[in-house]
Length: 276
Length: 290
Image 1 (cartoon, rainbow over the protein chains, first blue to last red):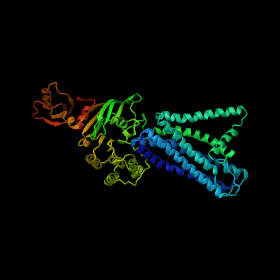
Image 2 (image 1 turned 180 degrees about the vertical axis):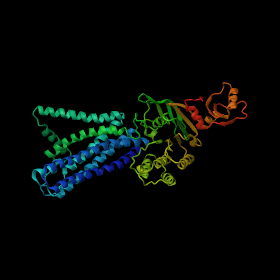
Image 3 (image 1 turned 120 degrees about the vertical axis):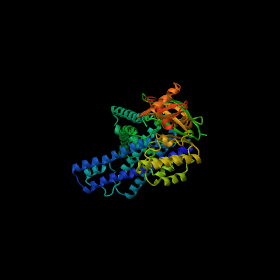
Image 4 (image 1 turned 90 degrees about the vertical axis):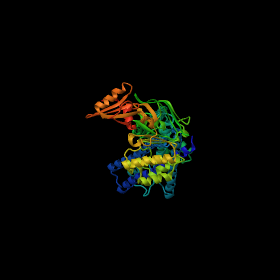
């Protein structure tokens, strides 16, 4: 591997990916806007609550989809540029993997910073930790009130996971792409998560058959992972996040399929089979 | 030294063969013209030579090193393709800077000078440029990159006559000051023929000729005149010469013939074949037919 090619590619990837660093705050902003609209309306109308729930979940789904597609399509773009500038696929893949890692850590850093801000603002207050994206609406429906100024801590955490999901797919794809032809790489990018889901589903089904609550078990695993990462364990929150990751993988699979469609439009590729 | 050797290169897209058994050597510091009709396999060849595509079989080496997956070999090559491979949201100057990160001999001063000459606004985003200026941005990047081997795939697409003229002059100037191997794939043969040193001609996925342009020009001649006079001349040649092309307009006949003029040419106009004429003769499926 040529050092100049690796450094050049890494700089280019980070320059491009740095634009994604703004996605998390923007995503949060979108979510908060919807939340505040609900707060302003202060309505207990079920139609409003239901439609707001859809809006919030929609924002989540859209953000996840965008980031997963981002991960795959960026990989294609980076390969194209690398091919134009005399960089081998292997060097390009290594640089991309590094850049994805750095980006994901930056996103986690953002998450931690915002969590710290949240705790600073709400020090000594009793805060309702809300349940995933539709939490605020759920809480309004349940108690008819919300703290006047609330940071949705979970959205931050989930948001950082979204970038990990994008990074995961980009990472997985470009790693495979450095070893296999494009089609094989894309199919494996989809196939591996499907296999993980299938195995995971099988394990859960086995637990249930033996009288073990799979939700409880997954939460325990989620908490154990969080403890290893040095974060506070919370059965409900982290269990949800752990399950949320599974959702991300499913959405990532959809993104991968879309990636195949987009890849056909890639201007130039180092991959055989694309008509110039 | 940067010599590219291609041996027995084949490339298939499904059942279609884009390149068949192509073998050639690209010498150091030489301007090549890559000529061929639409779909002949020119772009495929350039994409393989620049590492963007992989051959179905055969090998490409740069200074003896295999090209595939080799940063050293790939780093000696730059390709200006028909399509934009940089992210379109980049600004022109950023595109230059990105390229400079990969090529140690990139001449940023020269790039900015050329941008000024062409009237290219380097602060603009690439996707906001017109088709012609996108091409200009790519041309400047290729000329300034400093790579020992530069491929231009249809470099004058979308350029007006003035900009095409500027490009040809820039190629000659750059080549004189910083010799490198340039391979220029083009359909505008007449325009490029003044500076092309060697021509690579591909016909239906096969390499049919790789030769000095002067030698190619000397390979044939054109005889024009009254149809009867031309026919008499052809009869005097007997069956020894190969007729490449025949055109009849009114009572005038023009025949392109392989070889050198011989016999009585009185009353006939004899002109050497241009590179374009020779190319047309070599790649026309209806050779010799009226």
